[in-house]
Length: 173
Image (cartoon, rainbow, N blue to C red; front, side, top):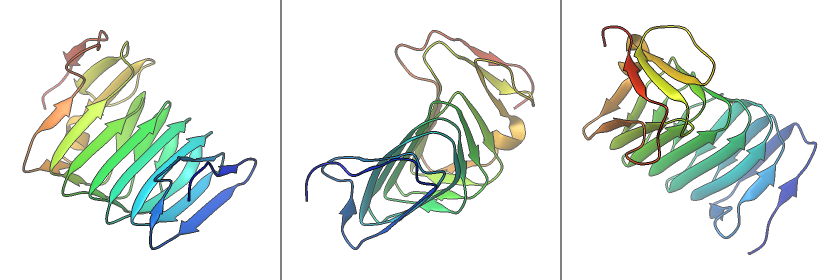
């Protein structure tokens, strides 16, 4: 019931439970394919993830040191994805609550729907809205990517405190 599950040098992590997964302590893994279904999910990973699949009626929290690519739709009452690398969203993310996405850079090619949406990058990284392409230490979101964000609430880009990287509007949005 309590403690930490650590999975090292595995390529695939698949967890299915009717209860919470990682609710008391996070699950630590180095998997490249992660498929988790549970009533609540809290997973930390080290290394690139090529196929991320998270589904829960409760909160979903995923933190990764490395790049992350969504492999299937991600759902939860709230969804928090944190990558200290690039985050590629090529499958839908859906939540009635907050969707929080944090990465050095993002590629959004599928819908992100939430009660509110919060997009962040490292505190010192710049944020560039409008243009296509990428630049080192810059979170770039094109007009097409921004149009895939859907909420009845608020879309927040950047942080209200501690962000020193600046925000640039580089093209029409």
